[in-house]
Amino acid sequence: MQYRHLFFDLDHTLWDFESNARETLHEVFEINSLHEKGVDDRALFIRRYCFHNDCLWKKYTEGKIRQDVLRWKRMWLTLLDFKIADELLARKMANEFLERLPFKKNIFPHTREILQYLLDKSYHLHLVTNGFDHIQNAKLKSSELHHFFEEVITAEASNSLKPNAEIFEFALQKSKADKKQSIMLGDNPDADIKGAMNAGMDTVFVNHLNIQTELKPTYTIYHLKELELIF
Image (cartoon, rainbow, N blue to C red; front, side):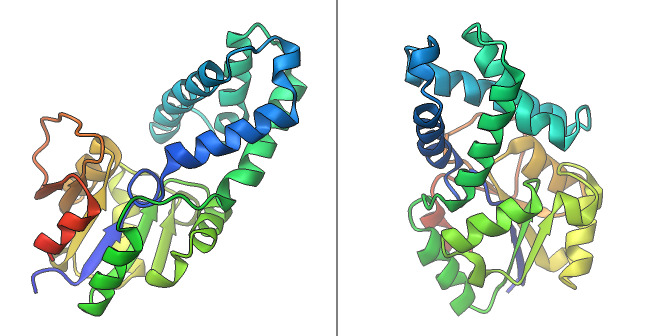
């Protein structure tokens, strides 16, 4: 086999971040009685949070903001959209969100099935994630995915972020993997695909959302079951 080591992204690739975040935001909305504070449209509140989260994550991966700023400011900016300038409330809700989110269990179809298939074929499976250390590990345990992976490489452990080449080099070193026998699988064209390509790795673009990109990954799939056609 050409590949021996498969490096997966977690959020949006295996673990369904959008579904899990929506469930968590519904709970945080209720706990804090936001409808009594003038937030009448819960769906809009969730959409605005996701918008700010995406924007701030981009800044975080570019090294423009710190992790602690990302964690609370996405909630602060969302509340401001509804004319609620309450920093204490924003920080409280941000903490509640992070406390509850890792215990959600939604994963993409065929996730466990395909990971077991790959293990049965003697591939070495690893994770490379920009997520926070303890949160990602909690997600893996809650969704019963932790036992599939030999190494979990986080931004905190590597002191780097995707798409920087350093995190991929760290992952290869920690897993004792030869780059020529390794491949990165992820959903994010910039962080996962472009980052791994710049580090000299082959890639599988897990394109759940049918995103258009000018990048040319080694492979592109649209659902995880298609990995059986590659490996």
